View 1 (cartoon, rainbow, N blue to C red):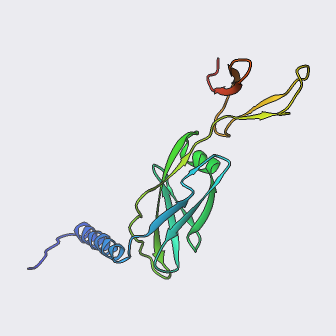
View 2 (cartoon, helix red, strand yellow; view 1 turned 180 degrees about the vertical axis):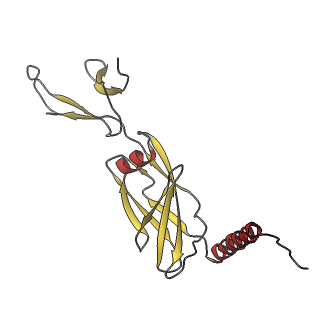
View 3 (tube, rainbow, N blue to C red; view 1 turned 180 degrees about the horizontal axis):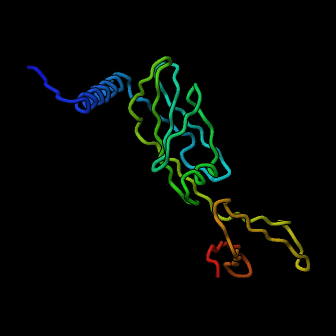
Length: 178
């Protein structure tokens, strides 16, 4: 069978098609990496370790769902904070960030297929800080409400729940700007 391509545009199209097919075939030859995230649930101020497990020394590429990829150096491990993850994805806590990785073997221009997605969950609640945990009836105490960095809060509310004998303080952060 002879393939007749009459003009230069047709030849260029065929060349691109063959190149693209070759790239896909070469990528399929590389085993799919496995991505682990430890721990899978963090607070914004905590860190998560990404480990793209590959069969050889490689250059790794990570991609967050809906975002552009970024390259991290060998050995394909990186530690990121929850604050960075929510900032890069444009979310605020609580958030779920899906991450995938792929690699290219040393000296190769071809990349593997992406790993299955791994999810990092960032859960942060307002944190109550009390200046003194034990006071007398005539003394005062200072309460402070600390919120996650990505949550822009206009008001913190403190609620006392329970009766005289047993009560607890509940902190509620309001991000509605009135």
